[in-house]
Image 1 (cartoon, rainbow, N blue to C red):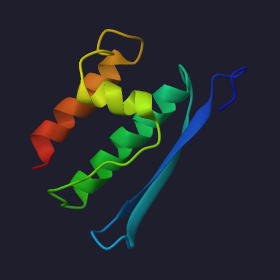
Image 2: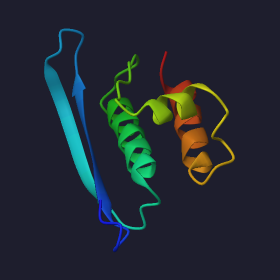
Image 3: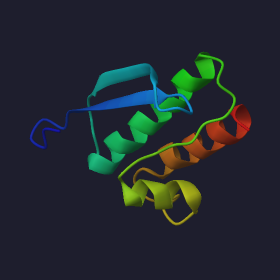
Image 4: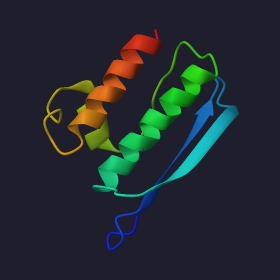
Length: 97
């Protein structure tokens, strides 16, 4: 992430139940709010990929404890990244078991 330019990137891997990689994705972001914004975007992009690949059950893993809190509670829903957190939660509820 480049604070001066407000740019950054996101990336994810999707594995099966045995831990074998079945897909990955990465992208560039302009107008990055903060590192949590990039973490949330990676999560959202991975869920969209999983849905488009026909997966019905997912287990999201991240080392970003604030992202975990934001996605499992409503504590961050009114913050700067709140709309993205709400969109991720809604997308997950609508598309996965």
